[in-house]
Every structure is written in structure tokens, then in C-alpha cells.
Length: 494
Image (cartoon, rainbow, N blue to C red; front, side, top):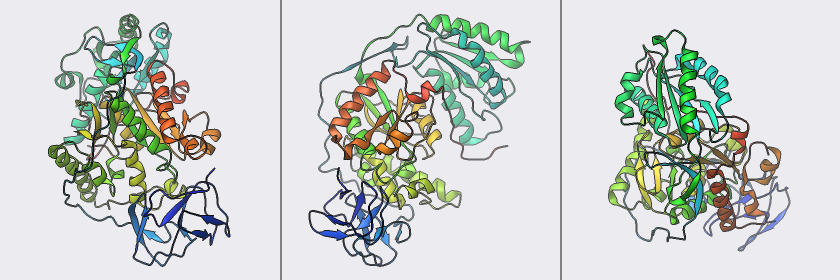
């Protein structure tokens, strides 16, 4: 096993792939470095002297400035590095040298073909409240309706949320768009829309957002209109189960898969193992005609030009500039700095600045050209790599990916997390220690990339695993019965 990694020849720091001890002598291609202090796994140390005010370079890019003189072999982290990020910027489109991935042979999964032509990877009954006031009823219905699970009906899930009323402006619009998109998601074989009756986003209002729908697949119940909402709802769920149970899995081309990509609880190895593996997977799926979606815009800050210059057209470049700057304006409109990141867990894992985090995060995008840029709540329309407007929050961003059409979410992590989203959420560890310690959370170990596997080998393996999940294999969070949903809230609550 390697002891360290220097990612780019211009880097002036290296990353410890195992805990390193003071006094160890480590050989790089250019020089030998004697460690001046202990270096935790995933953390950085200086390869040469870095003067105060000089750029600290990792991944071949600046991740910040030195706050003081740093000697060779010295630990490089938050105590001696500061962010270089500032305000809203202007950008130039420089697409030269970027080419899309070459097509590769087709591959397939066993999925469900819906009447609207979409493909799904699950055949579940979803209970979707229009307002948080009926959350408890929705949860009680989920429990009671488990009796319908069996045969081709794979689960009954209530997606609780606190919104749908007392909202204004964009918040209210976001809730309505999200609920409508969830209703149309092809992973649901049947949907019960559960309303109260007096909420802002009541069922009659939602109808304009839902549009055309299959009346056998989607049923509606407004609780204030009936004497016994549990009895009435169970009748409707029984009808939905009978309808969904008639669907069976069939062979579907992987070009119809839509996969969301997200990271959280990242560590210093996330940008070295898990995120590059997901990026290579993304390129593989795109090469087969499929679609991937990258989100968490604030964790693109400092690495945004890498995505902007891969935009397939000037129009997409302009949309990506807006994607970045609109989020920066969102931060500043709330009197917040744009660089209040990484989190305490990120720092403990070895990430020092937002640029450090972003340069690792954006590696999940691989090398494919950007073919689409989506607003929050906007369904994906174009195959290939898409960028989606959503915050870095794990639950909000993963839900946003599902709402835009992702059949599943690939979630890389160096610290571990048990959460789920409305769709199967694959947890990918950046290190083998986490994979062993939290085997009940982790589905795929990308930490092997610094042990016995190449990035390309792991990407092929991950593609195979994704096709298995798309064909019905449950991920760890599904086995545990976890299904979460979180809607992006930005403004006033009445």
C-alpha cells in the first residue's frame, strides 16, 4: 500500500493514505521529506517550504493561501491555511481541449416500464402528504398498508415533510413543484396524494402542477372531506396495490438510467478515491447513453471553472455562471459568507478549505461535457451530465436529485451516514476503515483504490453494482427501512 499521494506534479502538499508518524522519511518522485509532526490519515503535509501568503496547491489547483511560513514535512490544515474565496465573480468561457466521452456498448437492467413510457427501478406505493399537518396519518397508513407488500409490490412508503402551508413566494412554489415531481416519479407504481383541505398547497391547487396523470396510478384523498380518512385511504391504497402489482420487471437499456451524485461527511480521501471512482462511473454511464446529475452548488465554489469550461455550449456556460452566482447571492442576501464550509467532520477528516472540498467534490462529474443545467425542482430533459441547483445539505440535495428524476443516488462519504432519500441511496466509502466499521451503512468500498484496485476497475465494478440495484437489489438503507425527504426552504414562514 502507498503511504502518501501527490495528485498533480505542481502540488506542494501530499496526502497521507495512512496515519504517518513524526520523523518518518517519505520519498516522492522529486525529493525525500522528513515529517515534523504526526499526520492523520487523509490530512496534508508540505512537500517543500510554503511562504506566508503563497498558494497552497492540491489537485493541481489552489486550495487557499498559507497563513504563515510552512516548512517541509509540516502538517498543513486549518491552523495554517485560509480560503482564497471571495465575492461574486465574472468568468470567461474556455472550452478548448474538452471532448465528450466516446460511446461504448449497450448494457441493460431489469426495470419497470410505466404507461407514460418512463422506466422505474422500484415498484412501490408512495403516500405523499400535501402538508405537514397530515404527516401522522400518512405514517399510520404506511404501517397499516404494509399488508399489501408482496408479489410485485415492493414497499409502501410515506414521505413526510413539514411544508405545504404557511409558505410564501419561492418556498411555496418549490413545495408544489417537488410534490408534483414526486407524484410522477417512475419508481412509484402507485401514489396516494394525501391532503388536509385548508392548506395553501391543497389538492385542487396542486392539480395545475401535476398536469396529466394516469388515474389508475394516482389517487387523491382530502382528509377533511371524509368521516374516516384511514378507512377511505386504505381502500384507495388497496386499489393502487392491485394496479401496481400487475407490473413486472423487464429488460431495459441502461441509457434510460438517471443517477444522482452527491457527497457528504467527506474526508481527505474523498477526492482521491470515492469521488474519482464515481466520476469514472459517470463517464461510463454517459458513454452508454445514460444520464448523471451533479448537485450541491456551494461545494462547487472554487472549482466551478472546471465545470464551466466543460459546458457543451455557450448557453450552458451562461446557465452555469448563473447557477454559481445565484447561490452566492443567496448566501450574501442572508448576510452569510460564501465560504462557511467545510463542516467540523470534514475538517477532522483532513479537508481544510472550501476550495479543498470543492476540488474533491466536483470529481464526481468525471470528464464528460455538461449537457444540461437544471433549476431546483426541474426534471432532467437531456441525456448526459447535468448540473442541478440545490444546496449542500445531504437530505435536501439528495431529495432534489430524486425530484429531478434520479432513479438512485450515489452518495460518497469518508465519515459515514445512515440517511436515505426517496430513491435507493448507495453509500460509497472513501476508506476501508469506514467500510469495515459501518458495514451496516456502506454499500460499496472505494477505499480499495489505494490498496489493490484501480479507479477504472472500481468504476466498472460500481456500474455492475448499480445495474444490480436498478434490477431490484436493495441497498443498506432500504434494508433498514430508511426513506427520507427534505424540501429546500429559503424564506419566510407565516
